[in-house]
Image 1 (cartoon, rainbow, N blue to C red):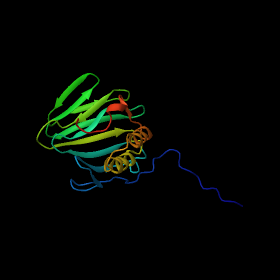
Image 2 (image 1 turned 90 degrees about the vertical axis):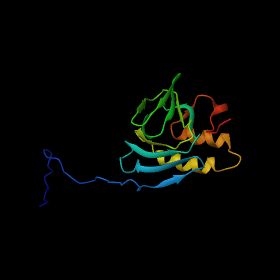
Image 3 (image 1 turned 90 degrees about the horizontal axis):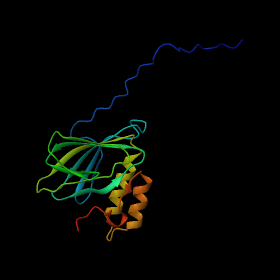
Length: 172
Protein backbone atom coordinates (compact mmCIF):
# COMPACT_ATOMS: atom_id res chain seq x y z
CA UNK A 1 0.00 0.00 0.00
CA UNK A 2 1.36 3.40 -1.05
CA UNK A 3 1.39 6.14 1.55
CA UNK A 4 0.04 9.52 0.40
CA UNK A 5 1.48 12.59 2.06
CA UNK A 6 -1.15 15.26 2.47
CA UNK A 7 -0.27 18.78 1.33
CA UNK A 8 -1.27 21.77 3.38
CA UNK A 9 -3.31 23.97 1.08
CA UNK A 10 -4.46 26.29 3.86
CA UNK A 11 -1.33 27.58 5.57
CA UNK A 12 1.62 29.54 4.28
CA UNK A 13 5.12 28.13 4.62
CA UNK A 14 7.15 30.89 6.25
CA UNK A 15 10.88 31.18 5.55
CA UNK A 16 13.46 33.84 6.23
CA UNK A 17 14.85 34.75 2.81
CA UNK A 18 15.79 38.30 3.77
CA UNK A 19 19.07 39.86 2.68
CA UNK A 20 20.70 42.67 4.61
CA UNK A 21 23.43 44.72 2.96
CA UNK A 22 25.25 47.30 5.02
CA UNK A 23 26.35 50.62 3.44
CA UNK A 24 29.67 49.36 2.03
CA UNK A 25 28.46 45.91 0.98
CA UNK A 26 27.49 44.68 -2.48
CA UNK A 27 29.34 44.00 -5.70
CA UNK A 28 30.91 47.20 -7.02
CA UNK A 29 31.74 48.04 -10.65
CA UNK A 30 33.86 51.10 -11.34
CA UNK A 31 33.84 52.93 -14.65
CA UNK A 32 35.70 56.12 -15.48
CA UNK A 33 32.90 58.49 -14.39
CA UNK A 34 30.38 56.29 -12.58
CA UNK A 35 30.36 53.53 -9.96
CA UNK A 36 27.59 50.93 -9.55
CA UNK A 37 27.06 48.84 -6.42
CA UNK A 38 24.59 45.97 -6.64
CA UNK A 39 22.33 45.91 -3.56
CA UNK A 40 19.24 43.87 -4.49
CA UNK A 41 19.86 41.80 -7.61
CA UNK A 42 17.63 40.04 -10.09
CA UNK A 43 18.76 36.72 -8.64
CA UNK A 44 17.75 37.74 -5.10
CA UNK A 45 14.35 39.07 -6.16
CA UNK A 46 13.37 36.48 -8.76
CA UNK A 47 13.86 39.21 -11.39
CA UNK A 48 11.23 41.45 -9.77
CA UNK A 49 13.41 44.25 -8.38
CA UNK A 50 16.90 45.67 -8.83
CA UNK A 51 18.36 48.16 -6.34
CA UNK A 52 21.69 49.80 -7.10
CA UNK A 53 23.76 52.53 -5.49
CA UNK A 54 25.18 54.85 -8.13
CA UNK A 55 27.94 57.40 -7.70
CA UNK A 56 28.39 59.95 -10.49
CA UNK A 57 31.64 61.87 -10.53
CA UNK A 58 31.51 65.62 -11.28
CA UNK A 59 30.13 66.33 -14.78
CA UNK A 60 29.46 62.61 -15.43
CA UNK A 61 26.67 61.41 -17.70
CA UNK A 62 24.76 58.39 -16.42
CA UNK A 63 22.70 57.81 -19.57
CA UNK A 64 21.59 59.82 -22.58
CA UNK A 65 17.92 60.05 -23.56
CA UNK A 66 16.41 56.53 -23.74
CA UNK A 67 13.34 54.57 -22.66
CA UNK A 68 12.37 51.10 -21.46
CA UNK A 69 9.51 48.96 -22.75
CA UNK A 70 9.17 46.44 -19.93
CA UNK A 71 10.44 48.07 -16.73
CA UNK A 72 10.05 51.21 -14.66
CA UNK A 73 12.99 53.14 -13.21
CA UNK A 74 13.11 55.16 -10.00
CA UNK A 75 15.86 57.58 -8.98
CA UNK A 76 16.28 58.46 -5.30
CA UNK A 77 18.83 61.24 -4.83
CA UNK A 78 20.97 60.68 -1.73
CA UNK A 79 23.66 63.39 -2.15
CA UNK A 80 24.27 66.19 -4.62
CA UNK A 81 22.06 67.57 -7.39
CA UNK A 82 21.04 65.07 -10.08
CA UNK A 83 19.88 66.39 -13.45
CA UNK A 84 17.13 64.22 -14.90
CA UNK A 85 15.35 64.76 -18.18
CA UNK A 86 11.91 63.12 -18.27
CA UNK A 87 10.14 63.72 -21.56
CA UNK A 88 10.74 67.41 -22.33
CA UNK A 89 11.14 68.41 -18.66
CA UNK A 90 14.57 68.95 -17.09
CA UNK A 91 14.64 68.44 -13.33
CA UNK A 92 17.42 69.50 -10.96
CA UNK A 93 16.75 66.99 -8.18
CA UNK A 94 18.29 67.77 -4.76
CA UNK A 95 18.90 65.18 -2.00
CA UNK A 96 15.67 63.51 -0.90
CA UNK A 97 14.11 63.78 -4.35
CA UNK A 98 12.44 60.79 -5.96
CA UNK A 99 11.97 60.69 -9.71
CA UNK A 100 9.76 57.83 -10.92
CA UNK A 101 10.05 57.08 -14.65
CA UNK A 102 7.49 54.57 -15.95
CA UNK A 103 8.13 52.53 -19.08
CA UNK A 104 7.92 54.33 -22.43
CA UNK A 105 9.00 57.62 -20.81
CA UNK A 106 12.12 59.05 -22.50
CA UNK A 107 14.64 59.96 -19.82
CA UNK A 108 18.30 60.69 -19.16
CA UNK A 109 20.37 61.50 -16.09
CA UNK A 110 23.65 63.19 -15.37
CA UNK A 111 25.68 65.20 -12.90
CA UNK A 112 26.01 68.80 -14.10
CA UNK A 113 27.91 69.94 -10.99
CA UNK A 114 31.46 69.94 -9.64
CA UNK A 115 30.34 67.78 -6.69
CA UNK A 116 29.75 64.02 -6.51
CA UNK A 117 26.16 62.80 -6.88
CA UNK A 118 25.02 59.66 -5.09
CA UNK A 119 21.69 58.02 -5.79
CA UNK A 120 19.76 54.83 -5.33
CA UNK A 121 18.43 53.43 -8.58
CA UNK A 122 15.53 50.95 -8.70
CA UNK A 123 14.33 48.90 -11.65
CA UNK A 124 11.10 46.96 -11.51
CA UNK A 125 11.03 44.36 -12.78
CA UNK A 126 14.79 44.19 -12.85
CA UNK A 127 15.24 42.40 -16.20
CA UNK A 128 18.64 40.98 -15.13
CA UNK A 129 20.04 44.51 -15.01
CA UNK A 130 23.36 43.36 -13.54
CA UNK A 131 24.25 41.92 -16.96
CA UNK A 132 23.64 45.34 -18.46
CA UNK A 133 25.98 47.02 -15.96
CA UNK A 134 28.70 44.40 -16.53
CA UNK A 135 28.36 44.82 -20.30
CA UNK A 136 28.48 48.58 -19.87
CA UNK A 137 31.77 48.26 -18.00
CA UNK A 138 33.20 46.22 -20.88
CA UNK A 139 31.82 48.39 -23.68
CA UNK A 140 32.66 51.79 -22.20
CA UNK A 141 36.20 50.65 -21.31
CA UNK A 142 37.04 50.14 -24.98
CA UNK A 143 38.75 52.84 -27.00
CA UNK A 144 37.13 53.71 -29.26
CA UNK A 145 33.65 52.78 -28.03
CA UNK A 146 31.85 50.64 -30.61
CA UNK A 147 28.37 52.18 -31.14
CA UNK A 148 26.97 48.94 -32.62
CA UNK A 149 28.11 46.92 -29.60
CA UNK A 150 26.73 49.59 -27.26
CA UNK A 151 23.34 49.54 -29.02
CA UNK A 152 23.24 45.73 -28.97
CA UNK A 153 23.84 45.77 -25.20
CA UNK A 154 21.23 48.49 -24.71
CA UNK A 155 18.56 46.63 -26.67
CA UNK A 156 19.26 43.28 -25.01
CA UNK A 157 18.53 44.82 -21.61
CA UNK A 158 15.35 46.74 -22.51
CA UNK A 159 16.96 50.12 -23.20
CA UNK A 160 16.22 52.01 -26.38
CA UNK A 161 18.03 55.26 -27.26
CA UNK A 162 15.80 58.04 -28.55
CA UNK A 163 18.61 59.11 -30.90
CA UNK A 164 21.15 56.44 -31.87
CA UNK A 165 23.51 59.13 -33.16
CA UNK A 166 23.70 60.59 -29.61
CA UNK A 167 23.54 57.59 -27.26
CA UNK A 168 27.09 57.14 -25.89
CA UNK A 169 27.27 58.71 -22.38
CA UNK A 170 30.02 61.22 -23.04
CA UNK A 171 30.00 65.00 -23.10
CA UNK A 172 30.46 66.54 -26.55
